Image 1 (cartoon, rainbow, N blue to C red):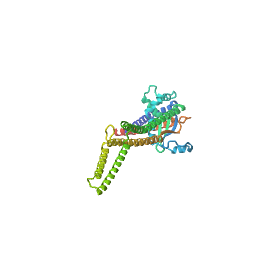
Image 2: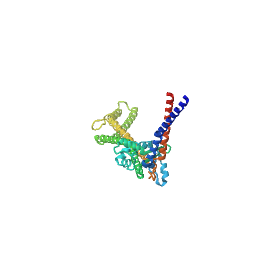
Image 3: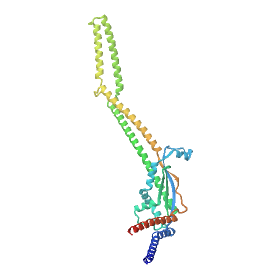
Image 4: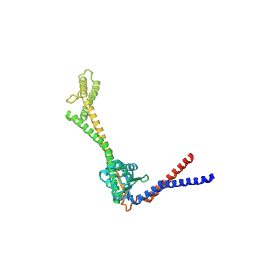
Length: 378
């Protein structure tokens, strides 16, 4: 009798449990899926996508011949992977969002009247909201093998999607040109400063040499030294001749003879002249010739060094200028921003099925957890 009573009670509990389970399944899975389907069917706005591909190139040759064709032009350029990463970071940065917004590009597109209430930028949005919405509307893919960037820009009309893509590419091209020009200027700036300093040093040493000559009445120590050497050589020759004549005279005459005395007096006079030339020749200010020669040779050595330094600096400047021209960076458009004909997004069926599957899996996991807890408590 007790078994008969307990069976209907158990059956009623199972029926109640099944009803609760079906109700929970409907509320947690079916109803949200229906709402999602209705939203995508009647409310979700069409989103058009414009595609573009581009890359950053570093020029290796300053002026490739046009007659050799586009293929030869590309062979003269090398893709820059680091530069592509920099460009990608720029396009994904708040900086470009601010630039585009200041030019009045983003607001009309992001707040378009055709946008639905769930996918529209609010009129009172902040800069952070604008940037977050921009990240949803613009997406980038980077191919590390080819160093090509692929961009997709979205809009609620086809023209807006293309307009957004074109505006982003224009800002990116300006960014690449500005950074490339700044790098070129920086690489040449140091070489130019070095050349200017070398030129100034050469002018200063030339001025010192001119001042030296003016102070000494166009006195050239080098030519003056040549004259002194010539005088000394002549006196030394006369002295040698007198000494030879004295030696011969001593063979025939006595040491105290007038002939010998005359020759000795001549030799002494020549010695005195030689000593006077060596010690007493000076300019009007009284500076010895040796000091003038030393000062002049020092100035000439500095002038030669300054000239070599200046010539080397000019070569370095020319090399830096050529390297700057040969390393010019530019943005090359591989695929221009397209004008879409049909709306690629939202993917209505795919998104609806995705929501259903996620909710179904989550409901199943939650059901297993609840049943496990119920069994442990029972």
